[in-house]
Image (tube, rainbow, N blue to C red; front, side):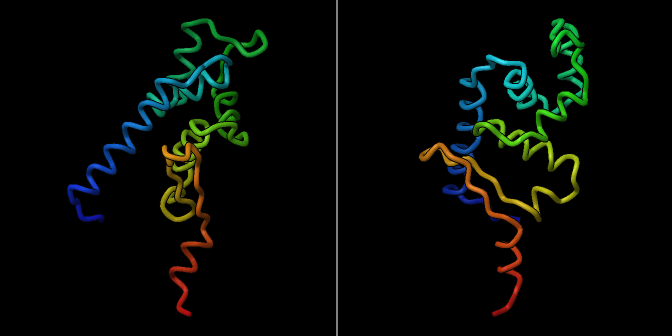
Length: 128
C-alpha cells in the first residue's frame, strides 16, 4: 500500500481530473465510441446493452448485444480513452491483469498512454 502524502494526493487528484476531463470531452460520434464513453461511466457491459436497447441503438440493424460490446474492448485501442477502458475491462475479467501484467496510466502532459509490460515487473523481481 502506498503511503499517502500531500504531493501524492495532489498527483492522484490531477490523474482523476484528467480522466474525468477526457471522458467529458470524448466525442462519441460512432457506436464504438458511444460504448467506450458510456462504459467509462459505469464499467458495466450489461448497463450499456440495456441503455443501448432503450435508446434503440443497433449495430447494422441488429439490437445491441453483450458480445458486440465485448468485441469493442477486445479490439486494438484506437485512442487514449479506448485504451484506458479496455485495460479496466480486462482487469475486471482477468484476475490480477491490472496488477501483474500491465501498468497503464494517462500522461496528460504528453497525451499518450505509456505501457510497461510484465517483463518490467519480472526484471524488478529478478536479482542481478
